[in-house]
Amino acid sequence: MPPLAERFPRLWIWWRRAWRFRSAGLSFSLAYGLVFALSAALFLSLLWWHTNGLLERQVDQAVEADARNLGDHWVQDGLPGLVRTIQDRLDLDVEDQSLYLLVGPEGEFISGNMPAWPSSVQRNDRFYPVRIIRAGSKAVAELHAYVLPGGYRLLVGRDVRGRDLLRHLLTETFLWAWVMVTALAIGGAWVVRGIFRRILTSIARTTSAIARGDIRQRMPIVGNEVDLVARTVNDMLDRIQRLMEGVKQVSNAIAHDLRTPITRARARLEDASLHAKTDEELHHAIDRAVADLDHITSVFEALLRIAQIEAGARRAAFETCNLVPPLHDVAELYEATAEERGLHLRVRLPEGLWTHGDARLIQQSVANLLDNAIKFSPADTVIMLEAQIKNGSILLRVADQGPGMAESELARASERFFRADTARNTPGSGLGLSLVQAIAQLHGGRLDLSNGHPGLIATLVLPSVAPPAASITQESFVPHHAVR
Image (spheres, rainbow, N blue to C red):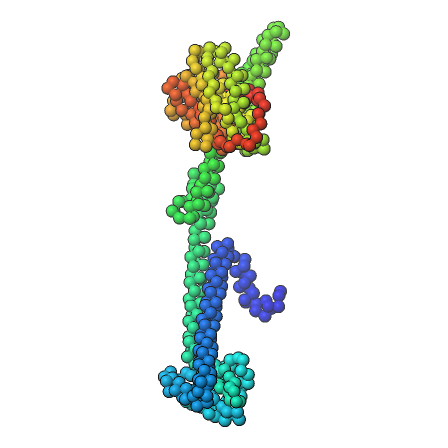
C-alpha cells in the first residue's frame, strides 16, 4: 500500500471505489470542467497582470512628466523658481497625492511635503516603493530621486494608496469571478455528462433491444447534433436487417428452388437403376441427372460471386477504364444470338465512357441485361443498348419490347431467386439482376428498372470520371456467360 494510503486510509478507500466505478461520461465532464476552469484562470490572470501594469505605468509616467516640468523651472528661474513651483503644486493638489522634497547639498530641508529624505532611496535611476506616514496614517509611495546642479537633490513621487486599493479590489473581483466561472464550469460539466449519458443510454437501449431479438428497434431522432450518431446507427441497423432478411430469403429460396432439381436427379437415377434395360437408357438418365446437378452448381457459383462482389473483394482490380470497347464486344457477341431469335440489336454508344472500376464486371452486368432482354423479347422486335453521360454519371440502358413487369414486381426484381409471373416458365434461377445490382453497388452506382410500355428498361447508373491525359486503347473483353 502506498505511504499516502497508510496515512489516509479512508481517503484511499474512497478513491479506489470512485476509480472502480468511473465512467466515460464522468471523465469527459470532469475534463471539460477542468479545461474551462483553467482557461478562465489564465484569462483572468492575464487581465489582472495587464491592468496592474497599466496602473503602475500611469504612476511612473506622471512622476517623470512632473519631474521634467520641475527641471524646466530650475533651468529658467533657478532655486527660487523651483521652490515656488513646488509650493504652487502642493496648494493645487486637492487629492493630496503628490509628494515632493527638495534638499540642499548638506541634506537640509528646503521645500516639499515630506519631512526627511528616506534612507532607502539611494540611486536616481529607478523608482522606490516606500512606506511613509502621512497625517498619522501609514501610506505607500512611489518615489524617484533626481540630482540637480550645485549638489541639490529633488524627490518626486505619488501616494499610491488609491492604486493599491484598486489593485486589491481587482484581485478580489477576479478571484470571485474565477469562483463563479468554476461553478459554471462544474454545472456545465454536469449538463454535458447528462447529455453524454442520454446518448449512451439511447444507444444501449437500442442495442439491448436488438440483442433480445427486436431487430426493428431504432434510435430516436430528436432534432440536434445527436442525430448524426442516431442516423449512422440506424443506417447500420437497416443494413444489418436487410442482410438478415437477404440471408433468410436466400435460405428459403435455396431450400425451395434447389429441392426440385435435386429430387428430380435422384428420381431419374433411382428410376434408371430399377428400370433401365440398356446401357443407352442408363447413360441417358445419368446425363440428365448431371445436367440438373450442373444447374445447381451454377446457382451456387452465382451466389458465391454475388457474395464476393457485395463484400468488396473485387475492388482490387479497379482502374480508370473506357467502357466503350468492352460494350461493343458484348454487343457483338449477343448480336448473333439475337439474330437467331429473330431480334434486332441496336447499339448507340458515345466515343468515351470513362469510369473507375472493373470493366469485366461491368461487361458481365450488361451481358446479363442483354441476355434477359433476348430471353423475354418476342420475334421481330428491337433491343436497344445505349449509353450517355448525364450529371456526372454514366447511364447504360438496355431496353426491350417484351412483356415487362408489373409495378409491384419492379421493386423486388433484384432480389435473389425472385422471378416475375411472366418468367415462371422460362429457364433461369432468378440471380441475374441480383448480380447486376451487386456490381452496381460495388462501383457506387445503382440499377434502375422501369416499364417502357411495352418492354422493360434496365438502366445501370455508374459514376463518371475524367479521361486520363494519355488514353490507352483497352483490350477487348470476352464476357462470362450470363447468369440466368
